[in-house]
Length: 219
Image (cartoon, rainbow, N blue to C red; front, side, top):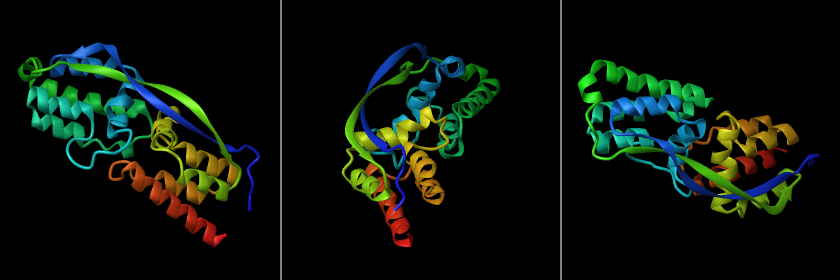
């Protein structure tokens, strides 16, 4: 069994929501906020609103779409915002660009509606991450599977979802280590394609474990 020179170090994390100094009272102001807010804020309101323990499986998939519907009653714009599939993006810049494009097109087509006040203001937020090493590591696939099976929801979320911001949305901590340290590129790619929309943390972990078991049987 292959052993990695650098072990995978398991970490857990907790998240505090920090409200920024930007907010929007109408759709035109939402566009301004989208243009100037931090990358962490874009990530918070799209990827991280899938939830720490469970992902949304119905309704709108990001805070921007949800606010547009609930506060401004613009179902048409909300649907266009929700139609942006975060699985298609490999950078925050590209995701921000498309969010802005959708809102900008609406503002150009409906300037009067774009400046009507919403019922509540939208506050641009970020997640403040506090990490703690778990004191558990893995040097081979068997050790990795054993640790993964008992990893907390918080630890799994940190390595599988939150890591995407650090890695420019392209992958996750598990796939990086499996590919780079164990040379298991096919496994790493399969894990990275586990759908973050339609899976809970538990079902995503179960799929990951099945992929690992399939790889072990082939070894």
